[in-house]
Amino acid sequence: MTYMASPAAALSMPVERVLDTKLGTVLGIAFALVFSSVDDRMHLHAHRSKGAAGR
Image (cartoon, rainbow, N blue to C red):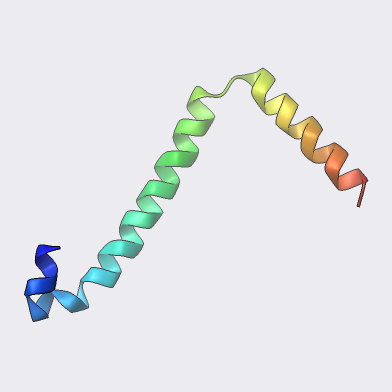
């Protein structure tokens, strides 16, 4: 919020938001992979396969 007080910061704010979003996405995927078990992944695969077959 302190960036809004400075007019020069308005140009860098969108870039920072994009980088923050990408970093959060990468970290979220990494944590999901690290902390999920093989059983969890197999269950999701079976669920998605069943849903794709019904289309």
